[in-house]
Structure formats: C-alpha cells, structure tokens
Amino acid sequence: MTSDGLLGEGSFRSKMHEMMRASILEAARKRAAKVDWSAIRISDIADDVGVSRQTVYNEFGAKDDLARALFEAEIGTFVAGIVDITGRAPNITAALSDTLNWLFDAAGNHPIIQRMLSDARAGEGGSLLPILTVRPEVVLLPARQMLLKAFTDRWPARDIDRTEQMIDFVVRLSLSEILMPSDRPRVDVIEGIVTMSKAVLKPVNRGAAAARVVDSAS
Image 1 (cartoon, rainbow, N blue to C red):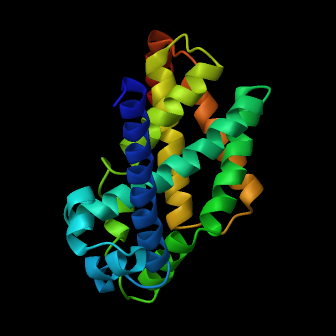
Image 2: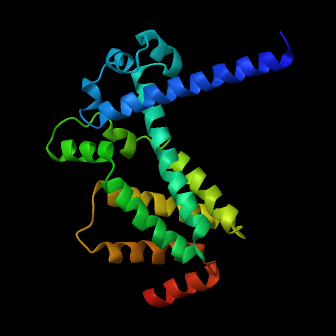
C-alpha cells in the first residue's frame, strides 16, 4: 500500500474516532439536560450511541471523567462565542459588555445549566453543580486561560498580570451571576462588572494609595 493510502486510512480512522467521541458527548449532553447526572448510567449513553459500555470507558474513563469532558466541551463552546464577539468589538469596554450580555443569554438558555439550577433550588439532584462551584480546575482555570488568550490576541497586554486579574474577576463575577442572579436590572449588573473590571487594569500608585489610607484614618 502506498504512503498516500496509509495517510488516507489514518485520516479516516481519526475522523471516525472524532465522530464517535462527539456522539458520546452529545448523548451525555442530552441526558444531562433531562435528569440529574447521578441517575445516568454509562450503559445508557453507550446504548444511545450504539457502542459498548467499554468503548465509553476506554474513551473517557470513569463517569466523573466523562462529566469533566462534557463541561470542557461546553466551556469550549462558550469561549468560541466570546472569541467571536471579542474579535468584532471596537474596544475592551464593548467587548466586555457584549460578552456579558451574550454569556448571560446563553447560560439562561442552556438546558444543562438551567436544569441543574432548577434542581438545586428545589433541593433535588445537584451532582454536577459542584463542578461549577468547587472544581476550579474544570471550569474557572480553563475559561480564564482561553479568555486571556482571546483578549490578549485582540489587545496585546502591557501588563499581563493585571489583564489576567481582570479576566479572573470577570469569570468569577459572571459565574456568580449565572448561579445566583441579581435582582437588579441586567444592564446595571453588566455596567458594574465592566466598570470594576476596567479599574483592575489601571496601574496603582501604591505610595499614593497608602497615603490616602493614612489620611482617611487620621
């Protein structure tokens, strides 16, 4: 067989593998949108896709690993939307405002997130909720890294540490708003997040700041 034939065969296998992996994640996504993760069995997902249970285990590992892969895929989808918005925004203020508007709409219409929150408020289920609240390596850190790249690609940062602080601030406040929405109008919430986030980017004269503290205390 020619080298071209081998390359073609390898490419075909790779595409089939990607399709199978995507099908497993989609099956997991559909079930997680309907019932709590604790009620879902790997065998159910395997049956939905038409593969063996062992195939799912071989691809993702244990059930918790599949849950993590599902969240990583969802984060990737959210970040792709944010990257698109960032790429079209004329400045950082517009990028933050447009991103937050889009993000809150997307989260409000996301079936898994809304089912999780609905169950949690009713005192039911909640087996996936800790991934959003106490597993920073699954949601917070990847989201921060991807968004930092999106913003610094668009607007090269003079101070990367402050830019990373701003992104961390935005991600944490956005997640808080999604999990526990404010009773204030969304426009006010977004304006507040944008204002505080931009303040993080401004350099601080620590000597002057310390002097102000002393003056206010005297």
